[in-house]
Image (tube, rainbow, N blue to C red; front, side, top):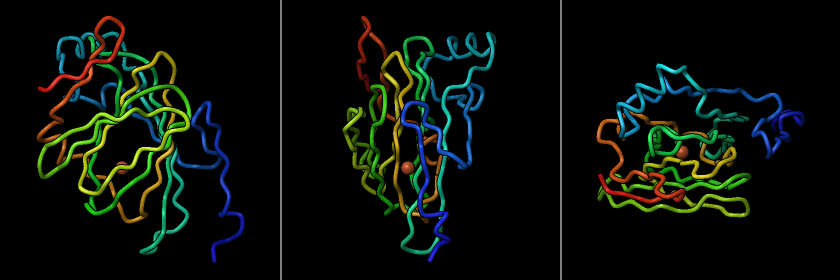
Length: 186
Ligand SMILES: [Fe+2]
């Protein structure tokens, strides 16, 4: 049994901060190559290196049946006409699925089957839970004008594989057209 003090963590759904958890940050310079408009990316980078998103992760135990959870917060913003978003990843252990639960703001999850390349966009909003099956690359996109905060629960052994999807890229991008998100195949 875990130490009773490790059984409960507290989080703030407004800020995405989990008390006592490890924070990691991604600035624009960490996201090279994911935005389709290279000129807009270079201009935004030259203008500073803004924070795009941050996460807090809780990893209480790493046995075969254990679970982790993390809260991600993507700030509002765009590079050219493309919304701020996460790098996206597959799980190193491909069968690992995940639940994403919206806490604040409005956004989309881009899910892409690794084997077929088939992709789906699913709304990520408060009171909604998105199921991410195994072997599915997933990226989160903030399409709103406030921070997008969500909680993900996944097997402890899932791991993060950023390289596989970075190499081939997602087949769909989401851009802002007349103030609204529009998906486009690339
Ligand atoms: Fe994941």
